[in-house]
Every structure is written in C-alpha cells, then in structure tokens.
Amino acid sequence: MVKISKESELIEEISSLINNPNISIQEFEILSSAKNKLEQKKYTPKVIAELKNDLAPLARKLSLSKDVVSFYTKLSQEFIDRGQRGMWIFSTR
Image (tube, rainbow, N blue to C red; front, side, top):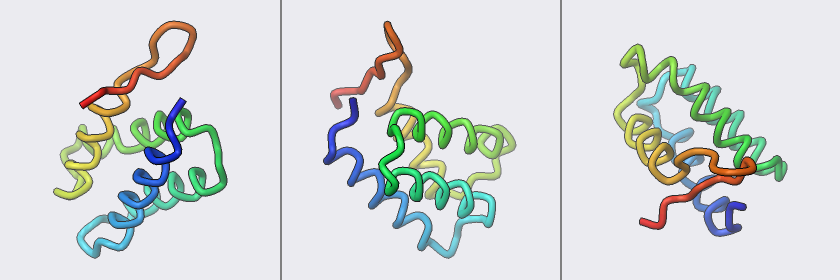
C-alpha cells in the first residue's frame, strides 16, 4: 500500500507539472485526470498504473516534454511493478 506521504508527494509533483507552461495539452489532460483521481482517494496503485499506461504512448513517440520525461522515469523506478498477489513493489531508494 502506498504511504500517505507518498500520495501527497505524488499529488504535489503532478500539480507542479500541471502548472508547467511547457507541457503539452495531452500531458496536461493525463496528469489532471490522475491528480483528480488521487485527490478523490481512488486506489493509488491503480491510478499510478493508469498514469504510466496513459503516458507510455507519448513516451514511445518521444513526445513527452522534458519535465514529464523526468517524472515518468521517476514514476517507473519508484513504482516498479506488481509482485505476488497483486501487491505493488516499491523501490526503497
């Protein structure tokens, strides 16, 4: 389970990106949706998985802005993958 501090840090980081004038409209929409879901206390691992999946096509097309690339990379490293029984494995870095 994601700790509360992790969730609030994630919301803060997403908010910062949303306010960044250098992100695309697609990035803005994806990030806004994820932020809203997190603020509504939706199941965080699911929101993170959806966020990564929504950003993946833009990443493959190399059309993520520099700041979102950094966030996407960090997100992929911190929230690695599902382990046994659907539990999320978090990096301890």
